[in-house]
Image (tube, rainbow, N blue to C red; front, side):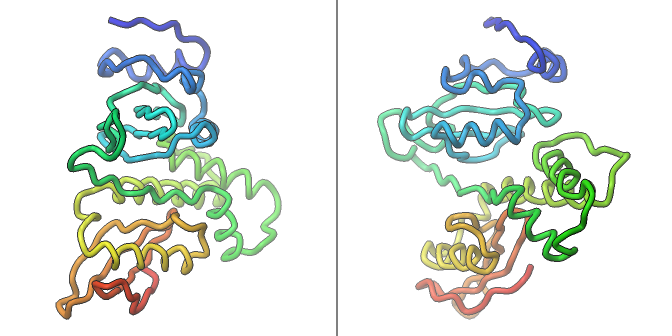
Length: 246
């Protein structure tokens, strides 16, 4: 059994998880300080340190660092990083020696983030709502995205933010399910790129979360962009025929 000394907020999170958590290797040294940190800031730190989220599985996030070829498994509890453990490269869809693991088909993750979500919300509800609207929306968004407990003493802004964050979390999970990976690659890539344009999002933000044939040789994809979804139809060769709100 590996015993680690835990202090501060990390200790509180450890109590939440209890003794049933599975054993993994110790945290990668470059992100070990993130155990117990609040999830929004910790996710930014992971990205800043060269990690890219590879997938969600069984309630855990898997982050891949292509420079050090490290796969880190992150468990979030009550809005904090409860654990950050090094695991096999294959868990992130890669091999220790380079390249992708056999049979791995890891989708991207629809992760637009708070700034874009808040900007869209303000555009729909007025650009200057006043008061503590932005901070309340952000607090709700992060609670919804990272599994925090809903604050029953909520404001309208908090509620809207929580719902947006919760929807984005659902989109992230859906992006890695098997049925999101079918259809011609050219058609899916074209619809994901069009999703970025349609939602005015940075390139690579949109991912397909489901797909089906339309009976005439074309393919219909549900595209997730952050907490938004759209429906895109494309030919097998990658010509987008139309895109519309989901």
